[in-house]
Length: 334
Image (cartoon, rainbow, N blue to C red):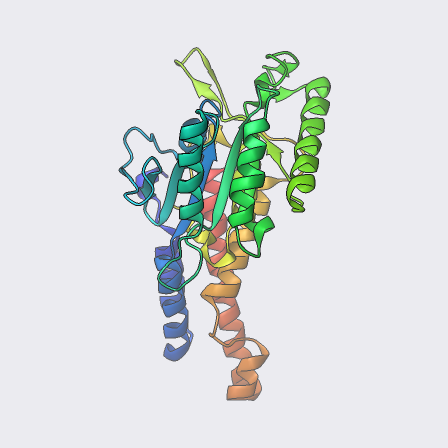
């Protein structure tokens, strides 16, 4: 299968429902839910200091050369660039560290964007991804950005709307202790990175009272066919991004993530991230695509006896088939 042959996830869900033997009223409910899910947009703000690797991270995750993807500068917050990938919207904002005057301007722009609401009155930005430069020990401006600018403007569910990720973990010890053949840190570097994660976690908790869970990764690079390094922990980063995204919006990632399987293969061994991602997408299918389409015992209440049980099994099968469509996508991607 090629990328052009791949059916988008929402079309696959619609096909499963239409081909089922569900009563028309239940088909219509599920199709309406799928249409609603298709129309939801995810808005992610990506911020970090110059050189932290925001563009390389976007390119690795979403297979989107940001030099070619359509973008615009937000007219209300100049210098925040907007990238539109179908219904995934990325807001690329400069971090701090460009001088006092520029930092004040960046901070005001970030705060203004974080306080923006959508047409339903909900916060526009679903998640702020803060990318730190793993090659530097001086994270003072990053702590100021996180503790003084971002977290105070995240509303009540602060912990769920921010993800801190340390890029360039491969050069965190000046390139030492990185196992190039395995494309992974050796035990010395791993301990250094784990300690760095705990230090960042502690500093943010002390400064804001918010307990977050930073992760580390490498976006990789490709200078040429002979000079390249695949990403490390990119599947983990995607998994955490999905976990920090409102559940009903998660399916929008499926048609936007990179289709290059080399991007996803090298990760730590803490979890099978592809299975965890599949599980997250499956939860969205079960909870939102089938929302309001009564099945199982509830059908028994409506139709009674064996008829209710039969319809319940059919409806459950549609949800299972839709989850199967998710699995096919993930198998193809990862």
